Figure 1 (tube, rainbow, N blue to C red):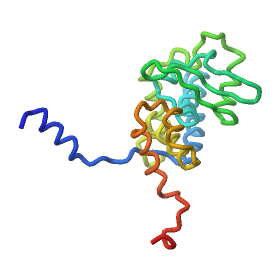
Figure 2 (spheres, rainbow, N blue to C red):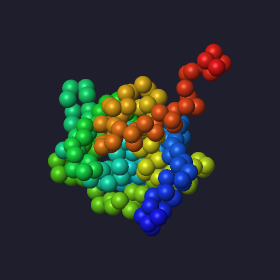
Figure 3 (tube, rainbow, N blue to C red):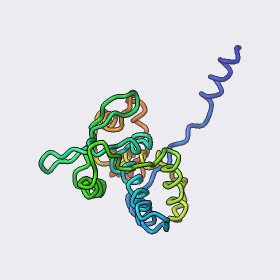
Figure 4 (cartoon, rainbow, N blue to C red):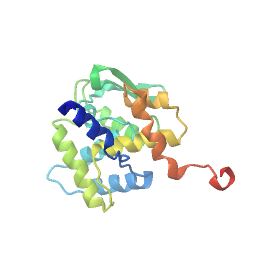
Length: 198
């Protein structure tokens, strides 16, 4: 057996743990905590909150969040959505109508030029540290990262009955098999009455 085959066998035998996620009330608590973080800049706390909202209400990767510009936020009547190029340089459209994220971006919208970043001067590393800090200060007994928020978004869509192929498009998954994990994350909230089924 070659070293490559041994590595492949080892990977296939590893326990595959389900990704961490947050419930909606935990996300709200995380956002409340972020607003209370004391910083030297008055813009820092709102930026931390925006980083969290982009992950949970938009399902954006942290690299996509820090690259988001005013021109990526589009308004069509009462509908609001984000249109941007994500992973693999593929265009993605994410509806965010009537979410706290929509309100936050709308508030910032009028003070920015088209090419201005919503998270101006924020790096991937910095945004990651902010989210981790908010998680630690929140007291939530989970390891919270930007990807935790993205997983929470996918799970919420699955629980809401959004078809898997649609979730894959919204999250920018190339392989729909990646998306099916969110079906497993919603088991504890399922409406199925096992006493009647089993």
